[in-house]
Amino acid sequence: MTPEQPPAESARYRWTVLVMLTLVYTFNFIDRQILVILQEPIKADLGLSDAQLGLLTGFSFALVYVTAGIPIAWLADRSNRRNIVVASLTFWSFMTTISGLVQNYGQLLAARIGVGVGEAGGSPPSHSMISDYFPPSSRGTALSFYSMGIYIGVLFGFAAGGWIAENFGWRNAFFVIGIPGILYALAVFWVVKEPKRGQYDPGGVPAKSSLKETMAHLSSRPTFWWISVGCAFTAFVSYGNGNFMPSFLMRNHGLSLSEVGVILGLISGLSGATGTFLGGVLADRLGIRDMRWYIWIPMLGALSAMIPAYYTLLGNNTTLIIAAMIPSQILGALYLGPCIATCHNLVSPGMRAMASAILYFVLNIIGLGLGPLTVGILSDTFADTYGENNLRYAMACTLTISFVGIFFLWMGARSLKRDLQTNKQALISV
Image 1 (cartoon, rainbow, N blue to C red):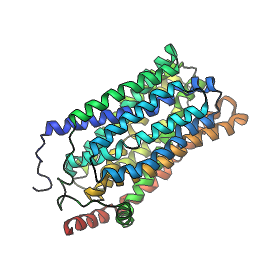
Image 2: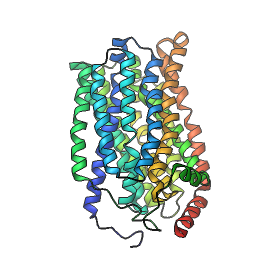
Image 3: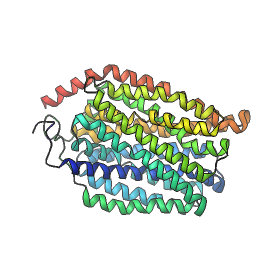
Image 4: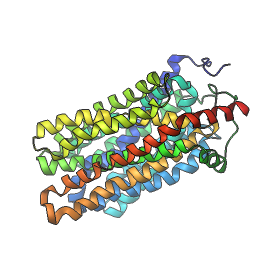
């Protein structure tokens, strides 16, 4: 079978699997982001600071998420990936459910660490499966479709979480969000099949690669590292400011919890999903002419998003700043699918889960780990000087980090063609 020849599975079934894995990722982000919309009532109930909120929603979660992701990805590259996804979904949904029973900061921190351990087994195995269900020519679109789960999860997490918390309390929001994930895991186990590894790639079934072999391979692919760090600083801004956007709208614009949930859910969910899918489609179409479009599109998106994003933070008209969120969310979400697809194209099929885990390690330790924590620390530091505008200026300072991510992506575009050719020759010679 040639690399682009369709395998035995029908196109309809491949898309069914993609939709189901995207829903798994949706549950991932509902359970992850539910804490963001609930942080104001939790802060009041448990007496927390902004720095503690940043640690809770950022660094503590990210540290365990990325640490657990490496061994789970190692297992995914040599065993049944579907079963790993099912087990992970069941565990993190259970830990989300018991988050509603906590009585203090330490217990909530422990529950969120449990969510992080579970969610570490979601994306790397799913990425690997998707790249075995779809050929390179449509891999950007497929992985971008999967990445839409982030924003669909944000939509439901914010909208449903805010409404439930305001009407029934923040503890019940965790119960309502967590339990359906456990039930959905059974459907994934029943419908999704494990695909044949490497069926679209030259060289046939790949050998199982160790972490040492994967790291040695990636050490000769500088593009992978440029992209990883570029994505990390892009995520630094999106996680840092995104996790505090509900608090910003409530403190500085007087919106209620349920209003913020609906507004951010619809805008972040729909605009983010649109941008994510659009990024993959554009990359696949333009990449036919020049593969560097897979990186140029994320670069141009991040740069263009900064203009409306600054207005969102510094403007005073609530209606206009909400409107400015739409283009900033669409443009800022273009990056993930094309970057994941490029990283998969730089490694062999037997390394893809590990490559995703390493990419997510860099992305989340810098982006999710340091982004919200930095905003929280800056906000507490600015409180005496700027008063009620402390969070506004903390988020504006964080937004400037976008330039760092753009620079690293530009460096990746410079070395992409050479590294893709090197990888192609390595696969053919196996």
